[in-house]
Length: 145
Image (spheres, rainbow, N blue to C red):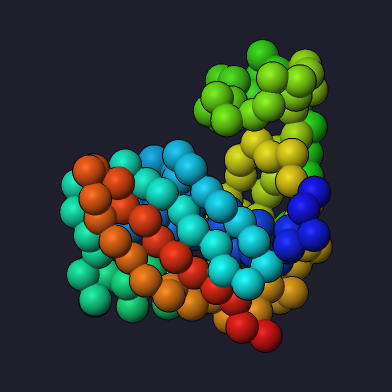
């Protein structure tokens, strides 16, 4: 793990991804750069977000964070996990037992990263900026205590 790795930020990324899926019926981010000070997620998307959509996205992510949802892990055999989850982004050495991170009843996804125990540890989610280029929507965000 890099020195700038932050389990709070990584857990916020999961919530952002699920919120994007729910709001826009798009897939989870295909690329992410998660660091302590600020992070970014890239989505296959056909346009930039409007200012109203940015406000609503931020609001929904913060609602999940403020719900104090438990963040926990469960383990599934690979053949069971691949029936429910996309395993493409897992490292090659993930093995035959797949770790699923669950954030309350809001999100579940395979992940090998470190996470917090409750969303109450995350802080306030803020979108710094968005941009769209060549079919890619980039969302930059940070957390405030």
